Amino acid sequence: MKNRKKLFDKLYNVVAVICCLLLIGVLLYTVARLPHYGEENPRTVEVVERYVERGVEETGAVNIVAGMILDYRAFDTLGESHVLFTALICVLILLGKDEKNMRKEFDSYYTVEYENYHKLAGDSILRLVGYLLLPCLFLFGIYILLNGQLSPGGGFSGGAIMGAALIIFAAGFGFETVDKVFTEKLLKTVTFIALTFYSFAKGYVFFTGANGLENHVPKGIPGMILSGGLILPLDIAVGFVVACTMFGFYSLFRRGSIGHDHTFMDQQ
Amino acid sequence: MGITQAFRILLLVLLIGCAIAVNLTKNLMSAVIIFMSYSSIMCILWILMQSPDLAITEAAVGAGVSGTLFLMTLKKIRAEDGEEKKKKKKTAGRKG
Image (cartoon, rainbow over all chains, first blue to last red; front, side):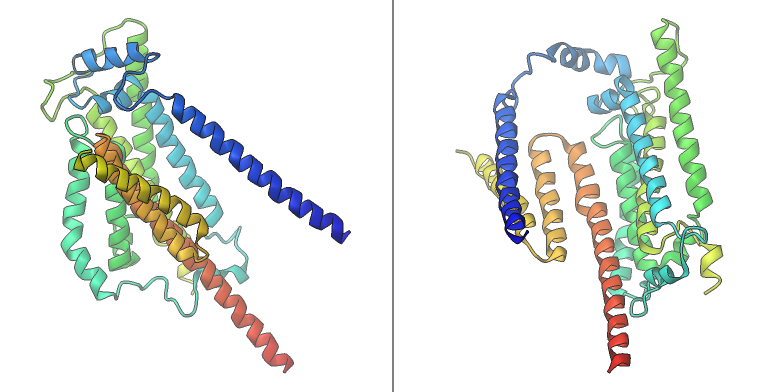
């Protein structure tokens, strides 16, 4: 028995090394066959030409990347937003504190004796940095969000920055401060409205586009802030979903609930 | 070889170094920090490859939020370990 286990272990190691080497070989082979950096990719050149040459005219966005991800390929971005939403729901199911799915012994998991989870806010360095940085961070996030059609960035980046700023806010000033504004109900409402708006708006545009109908979304003048047709509202929708998801993750990881959890915290 | 090229090669070497170091570190905390530095290097590389929107996202998500989530998880695992050790000590004390 022991010999067999030893043999198995040895064989396992050998097979693992061989698998690793094979994987490395396959990946390096693929990388070597990719077109060089800066060169044109012969297979997709038609699409690229169309995007680069007629992108500004067709989407109204100076930032071609935004035009691509939120106009030509808006369904990809819709899928990504839904992936984020699904991930948040999964984390909520797994880590969410609920009387029905939590046993009493597990309560110590969240309220550890030597770490006061809910009152980290006493750290003076974090507070000072928060005072100095947070306004800039929120403004920067909103700027990136609103300028998605003009400059690099857009919904995902701006939303991630705003979510990170919310996390710093919660870490520095305590969850009680954030809870006054950011409740579970708010998160659910915002995410629901953003995703529904995205689906319907983009569905309308694709429906009219596919059937050769005229859609009534003004394109605006390229280069102005109100340009790019639906790109700006879609950017805002994606940004809200991302910001809510980021902060929801943090809140769930840290204390097992989004917003103030009345059923549990008031008992203790 | 221009200075930009040298900088790029240095960054790529650092990137590979980080990727290997994550695997070799035994300490989970330092693994998370190396992972975050990997994301930061990748962020500069995205800028050099002229895709600033990816760079912004990488800096916010890769180096910021995912690192924070890893750290939270580590904290929780350690807290649980500490609790278990405490319980073990208690039971050992009773026996003694």
